[in-house]
Image 1 (cartoon, rainbow, N blue to C red):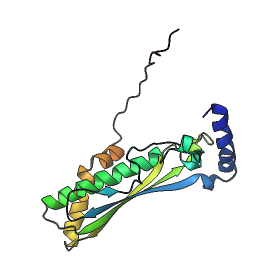
Image 2 (cartoon, helix red, strand yellow):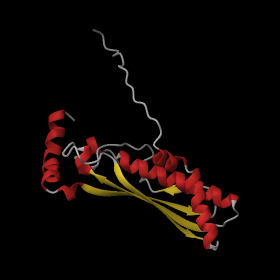
Image 3 (tube, rainbow, N blue to C red):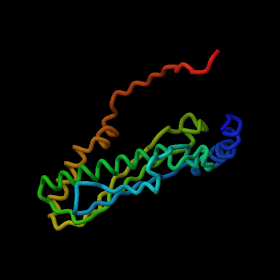
Image 4 (cartoon, rainbow, N blue to C red):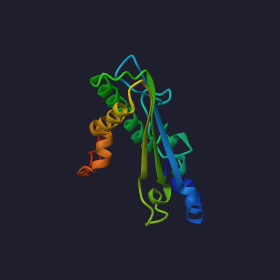
Length: 180
């Protein structure tokens, strides 16, 4: 896609977000299923084996050439659901808590005015993420509370999000194989 086509796609969205700021607020969601057979979390990802990330429709990504199958925000929530689900199942196993089934749900709120450059005061990225566990278990409330507390402590993705690690960004220029 060329830059003018992308600008043409995004222009009406940017105008809408300027005129109606609440229309830029969106909640992305991800869910995963737990069962009693393994220490896994089945994340609903669609039929694709290799995911193609692209622009969210709220950023002009309604054309498969630019939208891919899902946006990176979806992928972040999926990673959180998967990691939290696997961590919960591992901790439950270590604590001898039987989880017959369950769901792990993640929701994250975004303001697309920030990422679209419509409002410099609007945040870029998630402003709130909610993680919920719905568990089919006979464990006492206190044990379930401890299970969730330990899951939160040992979930790598959740800790990465909440602890704000030091991040460095760099770039390099690749040499073209084309003859000069």
